[in-house]
Amino acid sequence: MSQPDLADSEDTLPSLSRHAVHVFGERGMGPEGALRDDTLAAEVPVALVFNGVSHAVMMATPLDLEDFALGFALSEGILDSAADCRGIEVQTIDAVSAGLPEGMPGIEVRLDISTRSFERLKGRRRSLAGRTGCGVCGVESFAGLDITPQPVPPRDWIERIDLEIVLRAFAALPARQVLNAEAGAIHAAGWARVDGELTDVMEDVGRHNALDKLLGKLARAGRLEEPGFVLMSSRGSHELVRKCGRLGIAAMATISAPTAMGVRMAELSGLRFWGLCRAPRGVLYADGLSLPSNARTASATASMP
Image (cartoon, rainbow, N blue to C red; front, side):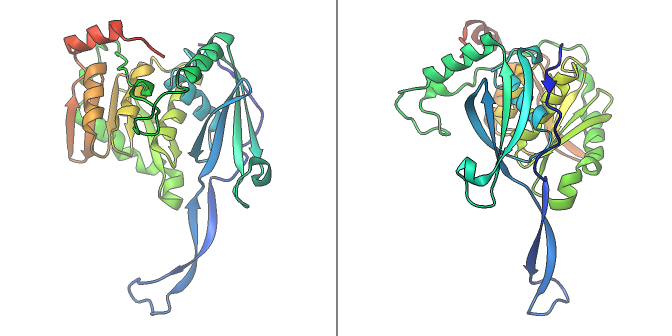
């Protein structure tokens, strides 16, 4: 898989910032409290711009934004492969120019994508125009919910992703959560091999963003077919499962509980899904060994946006 050319630029805004705070209530502390410096995670509006057209603005940690943009484009079905992205450029936009409050700059990530992908994106945007609202997650109608399950090809190694392997990967995760150790409030998405070795970790204030960063990194390196699984420092919601399924990721494990819709999405996708992975315990919610018969029928007949 070819890789898009990336702009030669450093991350344009800091991922962490220092703030003076007034702390109260600690043991041995007087009623007047104490002044200290605290480290906070950055949360910046990031506009994803495709061929000059702004498609979405996400609140994200300003780190690994090229990976984030590519992973988002792939996991949301805007691109079919990394080769559909010709280049990525990251630029900071000052608060005044962005129309944002003082001291709150934004970032534009500009992607140059293939004509085929851009025409499909424009068609999707037109299909959402003018529909009556149903009030679900900001989408204008039920038809606007892009939640068709993405069947994952069977993997002959899938049963090797057992509790021991999953917990081995999670045990290695905290030491790799560098930003979270400084500031807290930051999610991580990791990639582990089938032996449980944790090889990659990406961080962001948003769990979806962290996953997109990880998927983008794997895509750029041509590693999406590599045997292994995703682990998340979050709950297991349906959109995380679907992002993995769309890119052929066959297994995922989360430290917190899943939602019922997340489990159902995993079942319909044939994705192995572990949740509540806190040593010495874990729960296997979907085994990833077979697809329900109705899922095969649905995947064959569903029309994709």
